[in-house]
Each structure stands twice: as structure tokens, then as C-alpha cells.
Length: 123
Image 1 (tube, rainbow, N blue to C red):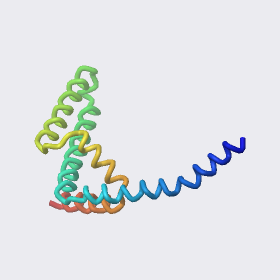
Image 2: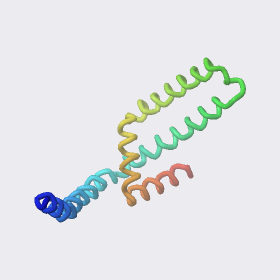
Image 3: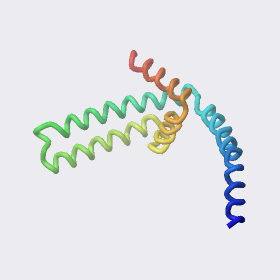
């Protein structure tokens, strides 16, 4: 047992150093993504995806679209519209998800994104 406690103490003492090293890498990666053009593109895609999602939900909720076949057709149509949006913007769903995750984890990046969204919505 003494060996186990010595290992536990060593692990606990080395943990803060490894956490500090991880924290140092995050700001560097986040600073690389602060490119205004990338944020603007992401915000533009974000707004268009939200508008598409709102239209899709409204059409799915319409009384005329209660049949399973009608709903499947609507979902296929909106999936194609989303794919066309990504193609038009030369942006992939994976890039969108990656940028969304980066924005959600970095307060400065989030502030830049929200300011960009506000600017684009005023246009």
C-alpha cells in the first residue's frame, strides 16, 4: 500500500503542471481562429442555417404536412438546401461544428462572433 499512496501523491503533484501546459496551448489555437473573415463566414452560415431551420419547423408543423410522406419529403428538401448552403459558402459541416466548438470555448472569440452576428443582422 505505501507504494500506491506514493504514486497517488506524485500524480496529484504533477497534475497542476500538466493542466497549466494544456491551458497554454488553448489561447494559441484560439488566437489563430480570430481571423475576422472566418468569423464573418461562420456568422453568415449560422444565420442562414437558423433561418432554414425555422422555415423547416414551420412547414413541418403546418396541418397540410402531417402525413409521414410529406414530412419525409420536407426533410429531404431542407437537407438539400443545407448542403447547398455549405457548398455555396465553401464550408463543410465539420468546419462549421469545429468553429462552433471553438467559439463556445473562448470568451473573446464568442464576443467577436456575437458582434459580427449583430452587425450582419443590421444589414
